[in-house]
Length: 173
Image (cartoon, rainbow, N blue to C red; front, side, top):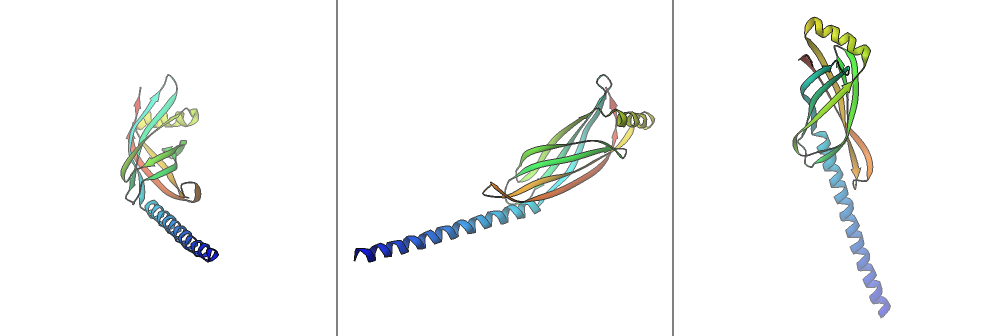
């Protein structure tokens, strides 16, 4: 009779194990669904170009701008990478990226600085500025949000593009 009792206990354990695994799978699918839905509800815009400063002493141009990321989704997420390119008067000035940025639900501001010493671009840009005083600055980019299982295994990336053009008054220091 003891053998029959052991089999009954094994059957109950097997059922409990199956129920536990089912709950884990359902929870995982629900989390991935929430993360996907949240990634679809994130927007990004260039909120402001704070400053464009040319320093003749070092022959560098520094552009400081703010990207506003709005997360109206259900959970906080981590941005794997924020990539950007900057164009001044239609000419490529520089590019860069920021990595591993945590985005809470609601509005999040990310301040970015780009320093460049591209002498050819700077020469033509400075000529435009001297003649007009104002310049058109375009910032293009994208945010990459990884969709991960158990925050370990990347399933896919959600990409959110942004682009904005601003007319800016230029300052020489």
